[in-house]
Image (cartoon, rainbow, N blue to C red; front, side, top):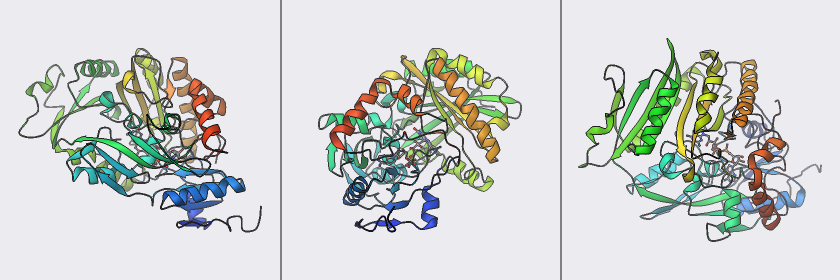
Length: 450
Ligand SMILES: Cc1cc2nc3c(=O)[nH]c(=O)nc-3n(C[C@H](O)[C@H](O)[C@H](O)COP(=O)(O)OP(=O)(O)OC[C@H]3O[C@@H](n4cnc5c(N)ncnc54)[C@H](O)[C@@H]3O)c2cc1C
């Protein structure tokens, strides 16, 4: 390698080989693998992104885009390549009655703050809003309103993308639809999203949130299925939480409304709501959207926010979710999830999940099963990662898929199986739009130890 390998790279942002920048880009929320890049390019415009990608193509560097680095096992890292940090490309541009144009590095919190000033909201928000728009559009993005609207990738009007040849292109369902399909949930393989146009709807002013506990996971699922059919709630989730006296099975639902309209008195009908045990609360929509802030604050004080996070995110066909959960829960202890660990589980009808690269089981309804695990030590993290892999193998046998944002070791062969026929979309887009991959040639999440 030449002594100053990046000498010819000119752009308005910054390129750094400083050890602190390298350490920043070698780390992620998962805290399990660490792959130092050769350099970190902080970009502030699509011109910058083009300049870096052109330089990388000419000089044989791989480039990995990074939003907030909240993936679990190196998906936004680049061993010896260039990490393209988009956090400075974060302007919220035009907001009209039904859409917003936003730079990819903006977080959903920044985007929502801007749209709420106009009384508007994106249809689907992730539970935690500190993720970048480009980051979740590159993986999927699912939340409590997904049962109505699908993933965030199902709610995009158009994208500006810099492809592997360094060219800025606009794509949408009608303009370069092949590129649009290869980029959404594409983990940066076929281009860097620099800007997105996202549909907006009127934001409700108020939210009635209802939490009800059930004795078993099967009863929780039965309620979730019933509520999904009835479309009673705007927001539908659920959790399995370790309690003092065993597992708690929490239905977490919410109805949106704007005064003078009031929430329907019948919301609690048939839920088995027990005022002594369960809870309703009325919140503003902004408070509801930011509901995880308090938890994040707490996890920062306990140190768990910075600890390794071997999260396992899976989708199961409805009919196999019980078998899968019974299997992984038998013998599972609180220690296996970590002090603040829990398992998110909720249903989504598959017909609203239309993004080709967002791979879900072939079933009318699928359940997200996301084990949010916190490891106190590196050794504990390693064991959790190993069990994640076993859980994935079991899920795959039952027709399940991985939502590959967490820490399930995945080989190139696993990716091949995961993507199935949709691999063709990626191959064709690479041939048409980029002389080489913008991301590293290997797949975004590989089983490698630090
Ligand atoms: C606390 C927490 C809460 C979460 N909650 C949810 C949730 O409710 N719903 C949900 O679906 N997921 C959730 N996730 C998972 C999250 O959606 C993904 O990890 C997401 O990728 C994080 O966004 P990011 O900006 O950190 O992306 P990064 O980790 O920076 O990047 C993710 C992937 O996308 C690529 N990429 C990033 N930006 C771009 C771009 N502009 N163009 C092309 N490729 C790009 C990267 O190379 C990488 O492969 C959560 C994760 C955490 C840690």
